[in-house]
Image 1 (cartoon, helix red, strand yellow):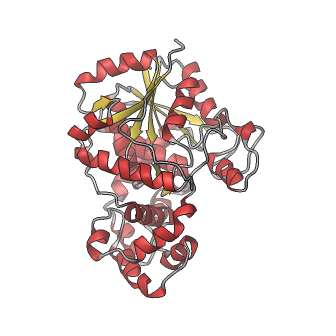
Image 2 (cartoon, helix red, strand yellow; image 1 turned 180 degrees about the horizontal axis):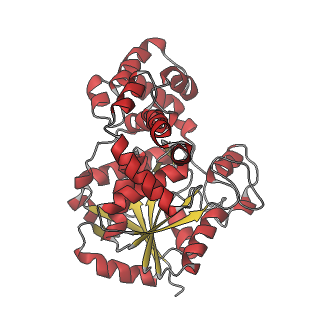
Length: 383
């Protein structure tokens, strides 16, 4: 291993993340490259904490280079999310991928990746979705029928499912080395164990205005967190007034969901929770629904993976600077300047601005929104 890549949100960076980066270092990584979700996350939510503060914390605790994953890729389905993130890691020189997962058997995960590819075109998957199952549920049902519970267990574990997508995406970039790290202590969305809690548990503590400092080295008091419910009524209004053209432009929006949204305007829900409840069905996961809602409310533009030819660097140290020099001729321009990124990838820059403003409004602060073109980059100088 020379350069290990990690796809992350670090929202916030907590002791479990620190265990991951420490373990990667102990296993022989020379450099650690992170691709970090910016203002929007894969769960279909705004990031609770500022991306530059998260990037700074990551570099202080083991990362050498942090690159921003812009929307809509940061809030896309797991396959698109993984492909975009791994593309950026490969551009930065990653030769190994590491990930925290409930299942650390790399042989099993690789086999699951092959199965996942073959099951896409299986007629039973189509039959199950026609019966009203969501696509992930249909795939899991097919895998259990054909291959047994050992493999369906992979696809019922959130981080293992993402690991499968990372492995599939890595193939396209010639990355063959993987370092799965078994999650320590708390499970995804589970109760804390000792001083380790998952990010969702920490965010919930903060919603309830309870102390979460023992679970993270991140300065939780540095800025007020952003919560999507602070923009709830705006989101409801935006979605209820979405046009058919807007819905067709949303990559995760199915025909059935579009029909439900069009009819929703007659119901006139008054808050975000009510609206999501009205739109929810067996054929769509809550995460997918939230991604569609966020895409529409923030006015994002859809992008193809081929358009992602520039990305912004959020933080780096001395080793990170070396990686950036070596990456000058890569297929993706890695730059500290959003203006430079905008020249090469204007859609990503526009989406970044919109997501940043939207997230800022979700903090409920009466302060000016950050200017994405003038924000200073984080350089860790304690070499």
